[in-house]
Length: 495
Ligand SMILES: *Cc1c(COP(=O)(O)O)cnc(C)c1O
Image 1 (cartoon, rainbow, N blue to C red):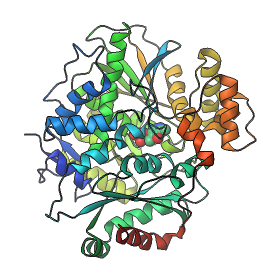
Image 2: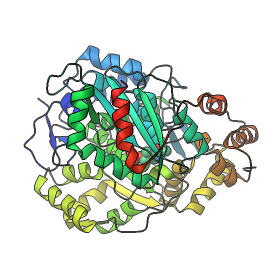
Image 3: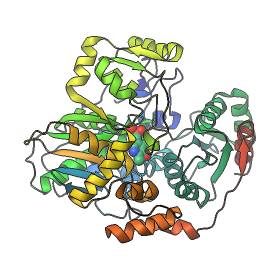
Image 4: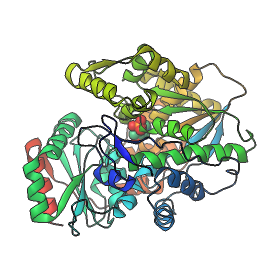
């Protein structure tokens, strides 16, 4: 029986459904299972199978308490025609490497892979304390991508509601419109007078407010939950596309069954790349996983020195979804690389909280480095790579993908091991930056930039992004930081 407990203690024993509903353990740790990898996914006949079939095998191995019908229904609803490519995550040869496109979902960012299915998982969990009318309200502060992907996933999902806060004036025109035009009867969006950190800290305070929790439960049958990437239900759907990439390499006769592959991953919170590690544990022949960071290179320093130090300047860059100083999912990797040493993990996380830094033992670092490579790109390098990839390959990449592309170019190439670069956003989400990098006109609105980019590169903007220009704005509320709690409460009452 697969059970989940915290990375910081072994006292809990939760099913995957319980872990998904709960999100985070009471001691602040992340849910992990010691059964990871006991069930392998058969790689011998991956070639030619649809994404949805591969997803079933992988998710069944990771979430065994969902029965076959439940899992198949979740998969069919999450990976249907809201994706613009029937392969869901198509693999494309680009130069000597391969690009795995993770951005063909409804919001044009890789977070759709997980957030299209998480609400469907949640709808199949049941309240812990038996209140059958209980609704889950997802609460998220966003610097851009997560908010929209979560809104799109949870809109009109049964038994749920969602409230998203974004920092006023700090997200792009496209990102703001993506959120303020969101349809659905259970969604709420507000801009916050403050920056992302202010909004994020306020959301954490709201989660910790016991009196508010009691009022929400009593008055509105609402429990708050988070859709951020520490939820195990957000992590495991990402394992699937590593297998899908392998299946496509087999199909394109680039590899034979059993050959090793290398993945280069634009990294922020460490969820995307950690899923690659889970794939390896499930039997995928992964040779290396390469962490690509932007100028916020805390992971590069950690992987080269063994010291994680968050006390450093924070840079707001042109790859905003990777501007992160604390990569939460790293805690899960540390758990597995210390053979489940929950005492050590608690100590490290305590050091991080108290001193802003921690240091891991040399032997653990050595093991991690055996599998994980690392590199980073500054903003000039990112711009140069967007241009380089276009000039050499006639393929347009976004600033996040460009970090990984840069790191891949810097690495020595092993001609026997194919390299897959994960592409995490459509370039049309960042049309201004992309146009600047390509030397195209970037003086107009984001929509004019999209049109220029389409015309000059012969590519097409995702229809949902281009249509935002004329979509109806449903939300224009601006709240001060200390008004966020009240906003949540009235949203809950209105359900
Ligand atoms: C969230 C995000 C990332 C980082 O992924 P993590 O799982 O947080 O490491 C990279 N690129 C884009 C476009 C994203 O939205």
